[in-house]
Length: 259
Image 1 (cartoon, rainbow, N blue to C red):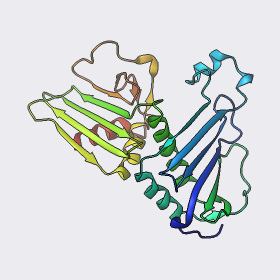
Image 2 (image 1 turned 120 degrees about the vertical axis):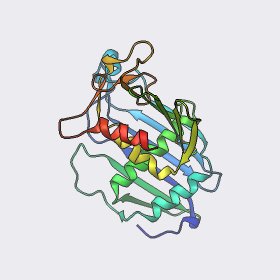
Image 3 (image 1 turned 180 degrees about the vertical axis):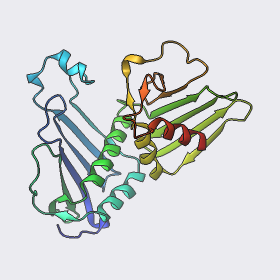
């Protein structure tokens, strides 16, 4: 793809296909951004082949019976810089390369100010896949379909209980952490957005057992985490290390204590 300066662009359209994965996971979406109209954005997602499943089978996988969705609106202006940055880091492939059928596909169309279009596939797929996860989550927040992610942690094993709340606002790319400890004044701090990925990565390493949700108020003598679902899970029962070689729970505890 030709190297087009960001200021010469009128719009960006990103098409995503999940790859040939089974329903209800298989989907495709399109995100189109008008760079000349205050980041006016059109988004549409369609889930494929769900007619092969019953409604209960879809719900059992954590989906709603109908997750197809479309939205139109303006992204916050700060997203212009984010799109400029990811485009600057991208090496383009003009044709689809050989891939496994189950691998996802991202196709990007750039429209310049003269009306010319350029289509390419990013060589940095991992970078784009994560960036698009953030962008789509921002859309769902703006559309009112999703609230900012809130992760909570409690350590009730010490004389001075520790409570931590992480709030991740994708729409405005804001990462806030509030820390409360008995006998100390609460501390609220905004962390650099670039740190979100590593924090979330550590939090989602353990295995979560949703059948072991804590009923009622967490009790003294244990540690608990809510990974964004609005429920508490107790360390070593509701949430456990993935295997004996990875101390994911210890890493989370240390991370929360060091905030």
